[in-house]
Amino acid sequence: MDMPIAHFFFSSSFESRGNPFIAIRSWLSQLISHSGVFESIRDVWETTRGERTTRGEVVNLLQEVVSTNPGCTLILDGLDECDCISEAHSVVNTSDSTARFLETLRQATTGTSTRILIVSRDEPQIRHFLSNDRAHDPIQEYRITPEDNENDILSYSRSIVSERLPKKTAATREETTQRLADRCNGQFLWIKLQQNTLRSGKSQKRLEEAIDATPAGLETLYERNWTKISQLPEEDRSRAFSLLRWAAFSLRPLTVIETSAAVLDQDDCDELLLDDLPDSIDEDYTDTEILEICGSLLKIRGPEGDHDAGLRTVNLAHFSVKEYLLRNIPTQINTLFTISTEDAESTRLAKKCLRFVNCQKIWHGTSDAEKDQVLSSFQDYAADSWHHHATVGGMNDPDLLDLINRLFDVDNPSWFQWKRWFESKKMDSESLDTTSRIETTGPLFYAVWLGLENLVKLLLNQAKLNYINDKSYEGQSSLCSLRKARLGNR
Picture 1 (spheres, rainbow, N blue to C red):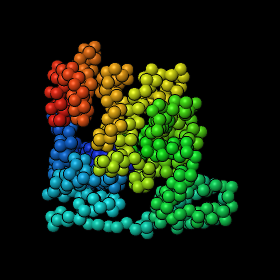
Picture 2: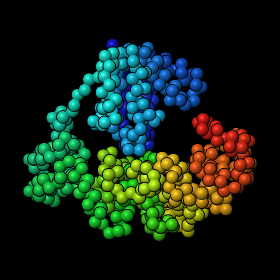
Picture 3: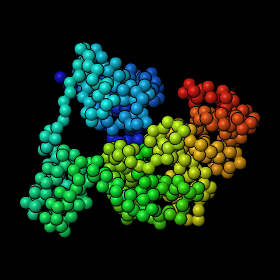
Picture 4: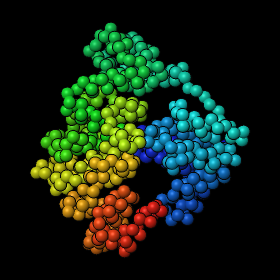
């Protein structure tokens, strides 16, 4: 019998890595090829008229599918890489939490013959939920050991050695392969991070010494890279920290060209360091200005070739690098507030985005077309993401509030530039006249629209009474829109 089966792999490089419920949408898109599932999904699609379904509708659809199609198998790999496992999302009753997702999944499949395979590291939050075994919903556990993937480790090690040492004898390659496999303790990433030490010009003895000198375990390997970064000249060290922050805490992986603009902002400088813009974005820039100063903590993903260098993305080498950074990266935390390291870093990125948006040259350009291209590449991210980072960080930082208030000052030329950008990118342009909305919507409306309640209070307390009469696109006052925003209808 043809049993429906679907899988999903969480990756720390996914833009949707903070939402475990995305797995259900992926499962359904795979299961639709099964005839019985297709009928169920088609009926729902027809009732929604092709519009994107809500989370509740997707969960109900999964429940319908597994109820009417016995024997479904759902595979979830790498659940521990989902960002809601992280420090900033450790509260289990948040709407996107892993515990909420697992409970929803359990409820949707209870009473069916559905089988669910979850592959994950032994994270406390996941273990706590899965340890609640029930007689009618049994859970079986298998602990993966290094011996389980021994053959896979050897195959991967052999592929790396063959690629890096093609001119060595077969005996040398095989001995190097075995040495890597023996030292890696079952960790594929450990082998991958040794690539740069495997050079054809080295003798067999030097290859062996290089492998043996590499610390066993990822934590020690990260520590070695961190020590090298800490010993860099101040300018390079600051750049390395900035690169790592953007790779670890951005809402999505930034491209190389976006990253080159993002790191122009330094925390101790009010102005963007525009003179530091690269002359060109190519493989040399990627290698020397990103990878070399961060060691093996970062990697570049995307198409090879100089013509695509700027479009490739800058990523952490592994999601465990983020865990290491959360414990070690220098963080300025306001002791007046209880705030996690990740929240503090999100606040830091919000301020970086705001300083970028508040810079006039970002909107009006420079005299150099190539540099303008680099600046504009990051403009969309900064203009769209500052309020997301600010909300995650808690909106309690005085410097952050000052930067937001500066942007929302109608006497600031950047206010009108950002406002036009926001309306063209984020608003529904079909139902509204552009001229009228520019004239009738002010700072209070946008503060309400974005759900920035601290900013709403600040604007009202400034006694700028004309803000209260700001009109929304439907002709309602901004305060009326606040109620709608709280209901999730903005």
